[in-house]
Length: 277
Image (tube, rainbow, N blue to C red; front, side, top):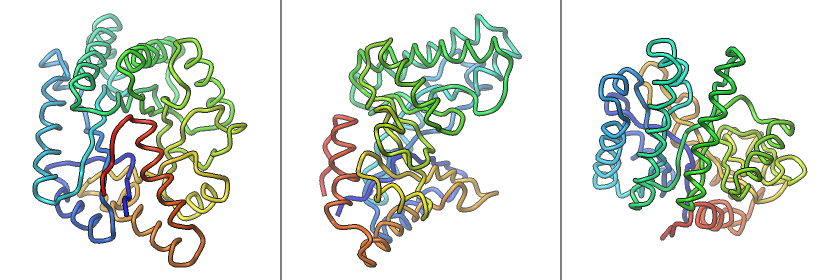
C-alpha cells in the first residue's frame, strides 16, 4: 500500500535517517521533501543552487539507506525575502528570490524536482509594500510552474475560504490550473465551495484527517515534519501519516479505496509522477 507524506523536511543534524526508518516501519512508502533554505548562504553565494544541490544529494542518500522513495520540491522560502530585503534592499532581494525560482524551475525541467515550493508569502504581518512584493514573487513562481507543467506548493497564512478564493483568482490570471496550486498546512477545506479548486495538503491531525475523508478525496496528507532535534516530533512526527491511515483503516473509518485515491491517484495527477508500490 502506497502512503505518501506530502510535505516534510529533513536535516543532516536532525533525526534524518532514523525518522525515515520509523516512517517506513509504520507503513510509509513515499515522501515529498522540501529542504530548508538559508538566506545568509543565498546572500553569500548569490544563488539557491548550492542549497538545492545539497538537498538532492541528501534525498538520494536517504533513499539508498532506507528504501523509501523521496520526491523533492524546491523553491525559495518566502520569509527569505523579508530577511534579505532588510539587509540588501528590495531590488537585490527580489532578484535573488526570482533567481531561486528559476533555478528550481530548471531542476523541475530536468526531472530532479516535482514542484516549485514552498514559495508564497509571509505567514505573519508585514508592511504593505513587502506583502505586495511577496505576492509578485509568488506569482512569478506560478508562471514558471505553468511553463514547467508542475505545481507550486504554497507557504502562507492559514487557509480560509477567502484566501483560497484569492489564490484561485491568481491562478486564473496566470493561466495555471487551480489544482496545480497546493496549499500546504491546510485545514480540511475539501469541497470545491471551500477551496475553489486550490488543492489542500491537509495537516494529518486526527480531527483534520477524519473530517477530510468525510468530505471527499480532493486532498493529500502531510506532517510538515521539521526534523528539529530541539523540537522532536514537530510539527507532527514523521510516522503520523502512515499511523493515522492505518488506524482509520483498522477501525473501518476509511477504506483501501480512500487510501488509494489520496496517496496514489491524487499525487500522480497533481504532480504528473508515477508512484509504484
